[in-house]
Image (tube, rainbow, N blue to C red; front, side, top):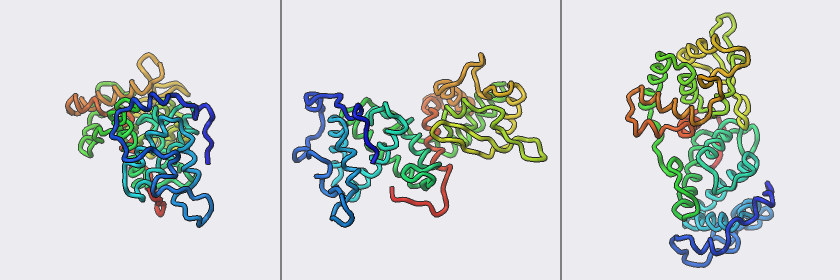
Length: 324
């Protein structure tokens, strides 16, 4: 079990705050521990009749009062013991990852960016057992469970609305094909950096940080050919991940590698400053508009949404499965 930092467990709301939340009342008082919910009896020893790991129950019980209150209500909102167990398993997996990856962030303050990063880690490195990534379908189901938690927390009144967590439609295959057309049009207009950022985001689902850190040293030519065919993206928690690149991306890489000094980021603003999520989001919108998407839809295609839909396709390890 990953112990929570005492400061994280310190209450940041009072009992009066809990009483002020407007929500459908439960049929009976909230239990003192989630282990008292039907189907969630903690298992403390092998074959002791428990339903779920005791460490998972303890992790939730250690949350601050508001968060524990919301999690308890969410678990009780589903009458199926099996689904309650799945909810607890997925939420505690995310919570342990969050404690390590974002130690200053409370569970209710997490956004779709953290969900994306968790899913990416699950696909590339694994989150429960290092070196054992999960199957894409498993990660998709886990994200759906976490999205249901944040949608419930919003309805509960514990957080502000999160448009992308609660249901912005993912890009369709047709929209993604149009985006590639938009990338070509950005490049034709001389906007090479924006075109490369959008192309790599759509193709690899990598993080904004990894795109901002990409240099010519991360572009590896095929021996004897001289054309870049492999790139390594370095993205903090994601580590170093290698991707083959398409001929279209090769063209963008050649153009930018020839205009950048050694060690200089390939993707940067016109004045040389580092790019961020807002800049890449604007490039993504411009590519969508250039391809003919309506503005209302184009402005919804934020980097975290593209990352979410792409990472579910990145790694589907053979024989690697886990229950959601």
